[in-house]
Length: 177
Ligand code: HEM
Image (cartoon, rainbow, N blue to C red; front, side, top):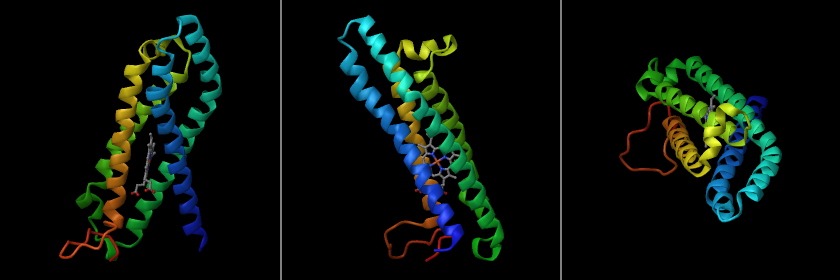
């Protein structure tokens, strides 16, 4: 395996693992933790939330940092790859495939998810409204994160093609047969 292939594999591992940590935490908090604490008295509940908050915060900051760094690197590397071989991809692959539009939508959704994920483990007064209704904002954040994963899979399939060998199916522009 050459060094570029290895670096892009490491970027993919990092991106997917960070996404798993971020989304796994949201699913657990929404469907495990919040319901389990709902019938506990408010003082104990707040103490448990504060105790979890301090421990979970570095994971949220770490996941956001890795997602941003590996995601931007992935995006720039893929753009460079398409640009470097116009004969193979065609001059208008990016426009024809709407890859940039999907990336733009994904990036904006990711910024909103990062804001809510930070607010949920933060303690600033400006984001207290998020923690005042944890179940609702956890659900919203999870829905947005789900949309991001769907968009990501779509972006990936645009240039890798489907895993299955379909008869008579047009080969996606840029996909190697
Ligand atoms: C909540 C945040 C995010 C989640 C859950 C997420 C999830 C994913 C997943 C599941 C993939 C597919 C990985 C694969 O099949 O190898 C992916 C790919 C990708 N992500 Fe993210 N991501 C997030 C944030 C970001 C951000 C902030 C950026 C850019 C700054 C980004 C850029 C990308 C790019 C460029 C790809 C490659 C798509 C392709 O194969 O064409 N992601 N992401």
